[in-house]
Length: 138
Figure: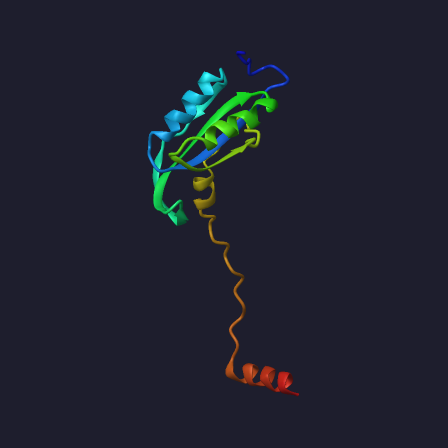
């Protein structure tokens, strides 16, 4: 059953995985294509050091795939992904909707704002400073 992305019963999903080999993403993509799921985006596998061991592994490969399918097929897809020995962990989520214009958030956060000039307070003489201190201490 070939899915059309504009069909109302189809939803976009993203599977993120941590694997022991960098070829696991290819296994996931092939499994999706075998089920005739429309793959919309593939991220490349990146080597990562794990915060804690997964199946006695301290490092692995992280990658993601975005795809479109009917919600009733997700359970079968998850069962198949669990059978892959190289996939240590995976999670299938519905990604948030993307806006038409994507700005680079990092540059937006790093643009410095010009410093605002501070209003200059009149300089106090020693006598005036001592007088203020006495008023405060009373």
